[in-house]
Length: 292
Ligand code: ADP
Ligand code: MG
Image (cartoon, rainbow, N blue to C red; front, side, top):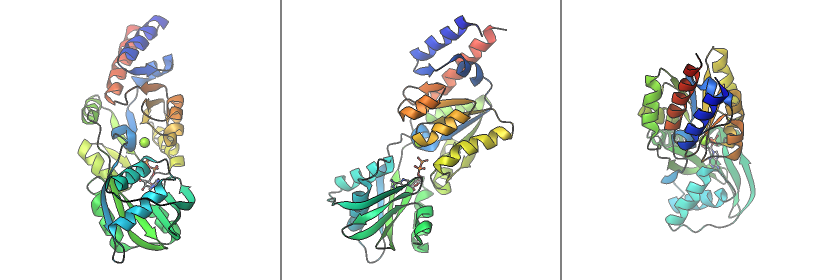
């Protein structure tokens, strides 16, 4: 493409909230055949809200929520914010925590009211040797609704669940449909459970799901699709997504997400609207067709 046509595409992109970092990202986007999308914050708004609190016998809902929300004050994860806000809006008073530890991609643990408290996914509970079939079953039925359900353990015993829901962005369904019409295969990548991921993917008609992916494995998943001969764009918003964004042939960051994601990506969608990918591909095709 000529420098002039690149400049024109950059300018047009900028006017619709699509920022190209360099000529290469404009040129290669046309050739993408696979789009990997992070779920939370990319397909969804990334602003989860507390929906359900489940207490096993011997515990009550307010105590579960108090323990979970108090501990989550130590975390900066969007899930943590949802649980803290949910507790406050239900009038549950938070106390103080100590010995806080964050286990990336799994959850958090520490002490609240002199008791050990852990909150997170199945992998975290397995790591701590705390399992409950009853809770696991209830968690699965919440996940089948597309919710993210987290286990709460108190005093080294299974105590309950908290579940949050993160709404799908308004423009996501249309973006997925348009990209499908262009023949692009869409794969969801998430640290969330397979059941939750499949429920969300099913609503959107997404082709494939890679769930329970640890942050450090995201780039590996991109590599494995590339090894199959796929020409991959990766869209994500988080610090966790940065290596995968850099690994993809085209990295697409949400302007609403982490700075490192934007630094690692060739394209930034200012408002985090996935329809920006459709617009960006249109500009890419125009630019590349001009030079022939
Ligand atoms: P995502 O890829 O959706 O951003 P993460 O990799 O950050 O997810 O986390 C994966 C899973 O680990 C979450 O779905 C949740 O079950 C658990 N988890 C991570 N951080 C926390 C936290 N602060 N509190 C509770 N659970 C957490
Ligand atoms: Mg995310």
